[in-house]
Image (cartoon, rainbow, N blue to C red; front, side, top):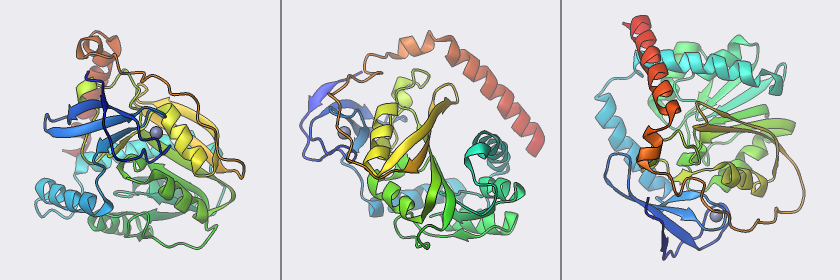
Length: 300
Ligand SMILES: [Zn+2]
């Protein structure tokens, strides 16, 4: 992997540092995309970072490419999403309130909202994609606000818990997003954040970068983002062979965190050969084949 010190004129959106290392010039499809790693906190970021308006335009083009006028998510995706929603709810149950309002920010096609409703909670969705928001409302009879994270309005302290699954890596200003969510959290409420783990050795080194994933978090840079937005970490875990990171947060007033000395990138020496020599790579492949077969049989 390339690891040239890069000349940058932008600051890291988590720690504010200007120094960075150029780690990749291609995305997972081999198209041109510059990715930097912050020399201070280790956060990966696309260079230049797209604006919210550029990301919106990108998603509209992608949407037209992949949906071709269909108004529904694919059956196999819904099936997968339902299973995942059940697993997530079971794992998070002890952190969620026994009753009351829970916000799923970036609620997609709504399967986690349906799971919350099934558990006796009052779900609220927030989804920037109008088609998905509409699907969730019709399919599961759950309320979904159709808006971006920084455009949405909810009363202060409205939710006993907020979940944010695979959303933060799409946000050019993650601190602003986490602070915004904090305004909607009731005192003592929890915020659950899950993102891809860019430190995972079970991720193909050449497939980590994507235009729409504008940031790439590691355990250290995710923890720092949470602390800078005014949260304390209550628990953290990894899932999916360490490829996903999850942290449970509560708001905590206190001094701003002190930055540690720069740490080397965990995966900076990882090669594609090393990836293919890991048994986990093949175990994961077999489990995925089993999953695809199950999805095929269940949805055909
Ligand atoms: Zn940084």
